[in-house]
Amino acid sequence: MTRRFLVSGRVQGVGFRWFAGRIAEAFDIRGWVRNADDGSVEILACGTPENLRSFKEQIEIGPTSARVDRVEDEERPEERFDGFIVKR
Image (cartoon, rainbow, N blue to C red; front, top):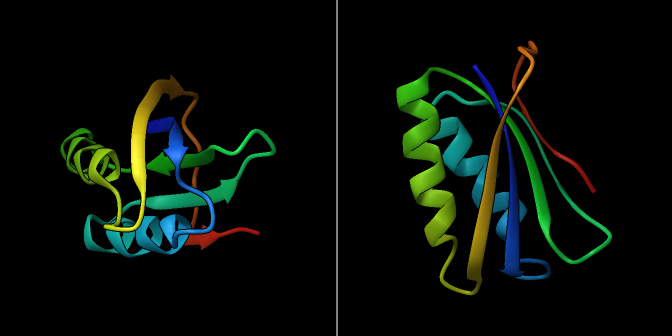
């Protein structure tokens, strides 16, 4: 299953992408994370429904230096990735 998450709040410049990478590794999530031009963080994540649910729960909390106001979540067509990449 593939899902796209768009995380809004104080999520850039606070280590959110690296946090997402660590959480993705913990839940065997593949895909990528990047900063968006509007100040949000975009994540494309592939994994089992259970792992994606757990991943989203952690993303909604974020690292201690962040403030997550909203996480938009939508299903996407299935994609395959070898690992999880933190993009610039």
